[in-house]
Image (tube, rainbow, N blue to C red; front, top):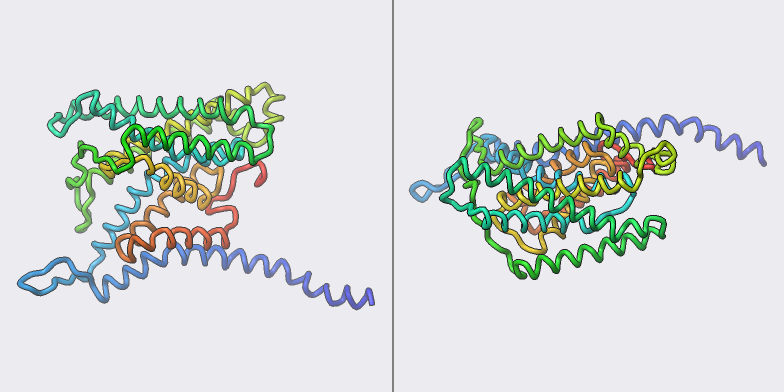
Length: 370
C-alpha cells in the first residue's frame, strides 16, 4: 500500500518544476498583456473606428490617428507622478518598520494647505512676474517639505515609537487615529467643501507639441518635480551613510543596532523623508488640480498605497512604477470608460497583478521577503 502511494506521487513530483516554470513564464507574459491591454485596445479603436474631434457645419469630424491616445498617456503619466511621490513615503515607512502609515495621505493634504497658505503670505497672484513666481514657488516647496517632514517625524515620535514593541494592531489603530486628527485640522482650516486656488502656473498653457499631442505646463511640472526627487532619494539611499543605515535597519533592526546604528534616529529620518516627499506632492497637487479639500488625503493615500503594493512594498522604484501605471489606468478609465468605473478598474488591475506577481512588479524589499 505504501509502495503504491509512492508510485502515484512520483510522477506528480516530477512535473512540479515544469509546472512552476510554466506558471512563471505565463505569469510574466500575462502581466505584460494585461498592462498593455488598454493602450493597445484603444489604439486599434482610434485607428479603425476613429474618434470625434468636433462638429463642422452640423457634421461630426472624425479623426483616425493616435493623438488622443498620446494625450491620455501624457496626462496619465503626469497624474501618476503625483501618486508616485506619495507612494514612496508609504513604501519607505513600511519597508523599515512594516507599518501602514495611514496618516501619510493626510500629511500630503496638510502639505497642500501649507503651500496655498504660503502663496497668500508671499503675495503670489496671477499678476506676479515669472521671476517672482519661480522664487516664491521654490520657497513654498522648501517650507512645505520641511513642515510635512517635521509633522511626520512628530507623529512617529509621539504615536509610533512608544508602540514599536506592541502588537501590530496597536500602531495600526494609532495611525488611523492620526489620520482622523489631521482630517479635522484640514476641516477647521478650509471647511468641508473643495477650496479653489489660483492657477498660478496657468497649467493649461501649451509648452510644446509632439505629433499633435499637447504637453501642458502642469504635465511638465509634475514630471519635472518627480524625477529629481526620485533620483536624489535613490542616490541618498545608495551612497550616503544614513541611507545605508536605513537599508540595514530595514533588513534587520537588531543586527543594525549591534553594528552601532542608532535605529530610532534612522526610523525618524525615514519618516522625515517620507513627509518631505508628501509635502512636495501636496504643492504639485495644488497647482495641478487648482482645488484642495480636507478629504483629498484619504483618496490620495489609498491610491498611493495601492501603487506601493502594486510595485512591490518596500521597493522605491516599484512605488514609482506603480504610481505611473495607476495614473495611466485612471486616465484611460476617466476619459474612455467613465469616471464612475475608475476605482473598480484600478483595483481590478491590482488584483490581477497580485495574482500574477504576489510580491509586486519589482518585488518586495521587506524583512519577510528577504
